[in-house]
Length: 412
Image (cartoon, rainbow, N blue to C red; front, side):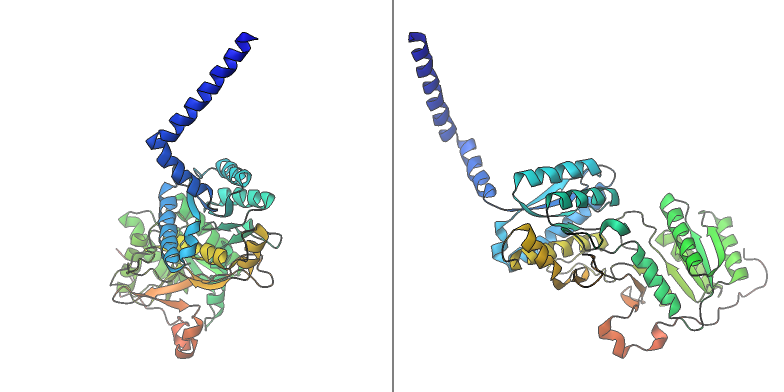
């Protein structure tokens, strides 16, 4: 009995000492204050590949998110009540699954976003559907990430099929009708994959594939390609190569007056933070480039996105904060209802998740743009609604007789 009582007194003494030390410790005291504040906040979780092979992609998106959050929270001070957390998905679907499951178990996250890689986006969206967490997909382009059965998942950016829909509508708009296509693609795996997608697109459109050749980065191949273009004269030429290669081939073809009337450079779908293509003062309105974001402008004050990826993150931040600000409460059901009725203009374009057949997919189009002599771009197709009344048909109907080479001899 005596030993039991002595043990009890010792334990009580140790407990009191622990409380005193815990309370007077300066480092712990300051940490407790910040932790208590954060614990009272609801969380916005952004999952991005911040390490590994796609870290540059994740960091560029993070910069866009940060710019968007900063600007919106300045405009709506009450939104500072949210804790914004950037979590590293490591480009790994299982890591994304684990992170979202943890967020669900903690019960502090009101909405999640990010995971731009298709495999992680698929896993993240499915996990969010299972636990009932509103989730905004940014960057991923796989077609089946969003469908009519999606309840909690939304997608800001375009699906992969959007670019083909734009190409199809553009070709259908031409008079005389386009019947022959040329495709020149680079050697890297991304360019080869894009070339094959374009070839499949041509087959589905019943177009004649007059050219299917590889740009091999050597002078002999370069001039062989020019001779092939001269010989077969496709009405439309796709260049699925690097911006530098596309520019070099087009400039030389234009100088020899043999480049097709319509030449389109296409992104080769390698994840990159750079704009596509590189603007030069030599490009004129005859060469077009396909892009999901038509306005890569110069940096402004206040800060604006510098590239396509930053624009996506910027717009996602705008959407998240606007939906949280207008939602009646922070339950998943109310946030979903608010997102479904959200219509707003963002740094990435017009956003609208509602309407028949949308399935929470924002139906943003791809665009064909061109550069003027000053390096500024303009939308050539589809023409924005606010420009239709002032734009003539000649601006979108690009076909004209192809130029003839200056000599009948092979190009050397």
